[in-house]
Image 1 (spheres, each protein chain N blue to C red):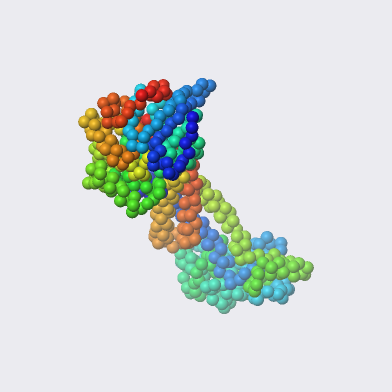
Image 2: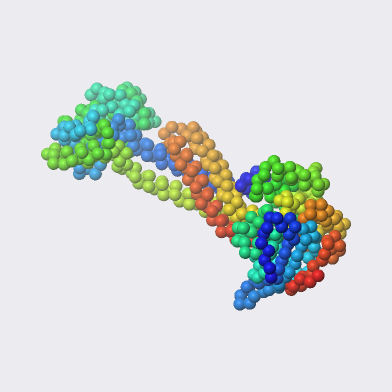
Length: 236
Length: 373
């Protein structure tokens, strides 16, 4: 088990994610539940993997640890060359804001903000770049084919459009790693494929790594690799 | 913060219940404050109007004009104290007044003052048998040139003009020269008659620190054959008027309870709102929002609701001031009261909303993952 310390020179070439023998244990009463059991996983800088597994298999825990929401009980977590294993909650919050993108299940856009404002939230809670942030949001909306929907509320958008806004939001902070939590679960096959195609294009064109959590084996051929997880154990 | 304020603009309906409740509370606060100020001002006008820094009572009087007597000897000692620049005698008798044109039992409460040093807005003492009348007595039908009959002895005084904001203990005041006042006092209150040259109290102007002059006066008269004194500030003399302290304390307690209610309303409302927002906060925390930012948003929303309520409450207070017929109820709109009410409502709202802090802190960003919206 070797810990990789953050190195700005290596950062560009360092893997997007390195999980080394990560264990996560939840205490429940007198017993312990092992959600993740010595998981080791490395993601290249622009690699897209599908994480497939039944409910309760540890997908959520793995994503939460990889995305800097939870800290592991054992093992090391290195994201884009930065070892976040022992980060405090506050450090993790700052880390997520700068380096990780999330697309949540059910999209979870902020209902009282327009599509454009949903993207700008990332800038407002973070660096507050002002004009640069607005420019980036407009550019992302343009790329995602949403330029003419920028001023619409989530309720006025179709399911596919909402999903694209969520992808735009995840890319606002120019992340090193994006986590997609069941991105196609609410969409029909055709729309799901379109969204997966879009995800692949966006990730590859930016050289950004991604983990796509899915139940849907049909969507896995858009990814570079499939990782299965059962009872907290990873298999390829 | 911007997110929170934008939410208020986009979903004003969500905050309507809290805004309406707080607005009602703000109106109540302004009304209570206005009534308190009105009552106090109406009780203390005659004392506040004195162009003086100190009031000298006899030591045993417990700051009551009724019980106090100051002899000419004591007065001379007071005048000799360094720092005393002027001394005026004052006395007051509270009586029922019969007003021409009103029924035989329709008496108006009046306070007849005998004075030497003219208070603010009151001309110099009039001739014997004449009085300046408080303008609030016009509501009782008093007119210039009328002769009023005071007390059981029906002592006659003629109204020669009106003066404003000089009422005393809730009653309209009449301002006579010392001889007229003594005559009326002695006719109607033979048991507590006042000898020539004697007053109930002295109003004293000072140069320099009035509190040290007050101490010096009491020291100078301590061994006096004419009687020791108790010298207090004008504000303390106002507070010593019957009922003033009690009114203030009762109203302040009601205002305090009202503010606690405001804080509880805000606390409950934002607790509910925070519970509703657990999903939203989870997502925002997952994408990197700090708890501090989210909590600041909650407090900002409570502050906006409170300020809106205070603004509407202020409009209500002004309307009340304009629309109430003068003298109908003792209501007085003071800018300082409006500011104090607004600021205390704001503080109550901020305190109330801060009860949501724990809930905001407890939201787990992990809850945003692995869960449909």
